Length: 451
Ligand SMILES: Nc1nc2c(ncn2[C@@H]2O[C@H](COP(=O)(O)OP(=O)(O)OP(=O)(O)O)[C@@H](O)[C@H]2O)c(=O)[nH]1
Ligand SMILES: [Mg+2]
Image (tube, rainbow, N blue to C red; front, top):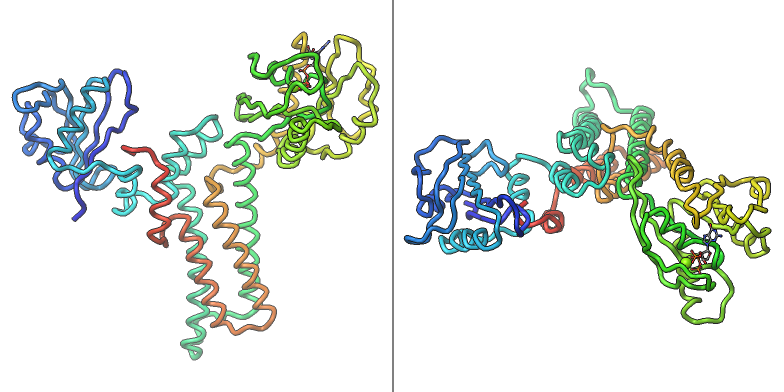
């Protein structure tokens, strides 16, 4: 028997209500003596009751208590939820009383862990709950809801079913070669089936990575020579004076970060130190960081001082940019632009004045355009939700390739069935159909207390 656990499920602070959740076999019997109101052991399941939580004769709080009996609860155990007034003190006092009753304080994610262990949800749905809570934009929210409703589980299960069929027919061929009515698994057959699986999985991984980008935020860096207006651009985008702006070249040395939401997308923007040859030790480190972040970014906003002809330094810098993920900003338009689009053939350009806040909207529109393609390709039901799931799918795909290779090399089919089982297990770790204690612990320890 699992012990009974409790935790504050709402954020601890001043609010209208806070909820304390209790789950386990003794949930009802241990809350009941603290409650002045109906006898909770006698009430129907899924009912709510008005009363008081008392410590001896002292009233701690006026509450509503929800009683939900197993198995139709989140944890599939008996669950009691106490709705207190939302103050730190009454909430903590109620919790203390529960602990005094011998109910254990839940670990982070323990309610959800029980929901998993009791077969109520799988890993992907548990992760979807967290993604839903943490979702920062419309895409993240939509995908989390879809996954919570089981789209990711279904996807992975369908894949595993196909693999199981393949493994079964290999094993039947090996164990009962005399069975005529079962189609023989030939090398061609198997190779064809594996190819299909591999190309489908590759598509899912690609789709998922694209949506990860939309969901987690497009890593954006602002780069350029000193004094061209990079920090001014960051401030214009964020609509706040976050980075220091001066006319001294080399003002920004450390990375300054901010985030903006553009409809379905979130941009995580970094303003960096101006790139130039310098002997200043601190500035040099800044420049190195700028170059490094530029390589890792999903989107580079390359700022030029458009009122001055392109310098050799500008040209050298532009050489390093990938036109597919770069937008060149011709800044200081208010002083008159001397650089033209033709000077920058390969690149998308936006004329701007960050001083007079001109061109910001057209920059935003271009960014949205640039990533709209990814949005179109996304297919909500064929998506893995996070980096953990994607990494496992990639591993499974790698193993599939190895099996295909072995097949070509003439390895015996029964040897392959072992490898195929490993793929099955790898995919099973996405949903939790196969898992180790270690995975279980690391997965749920990132959850909040009370979830
Ligand atoms: N006329 C004009 N001046 C601008 C514009 N944008 C920025 N400036 C000025 O250019 C100077 C440098 O601006 P910053 O935003 O600090 O430039 P930066 O690229 O971040 O410079 P570093 O951090 O030194 O690399 C400041 O004096 C700004 O006021 C613009 O659109 N027009
Ligand atoms: Mg700056």
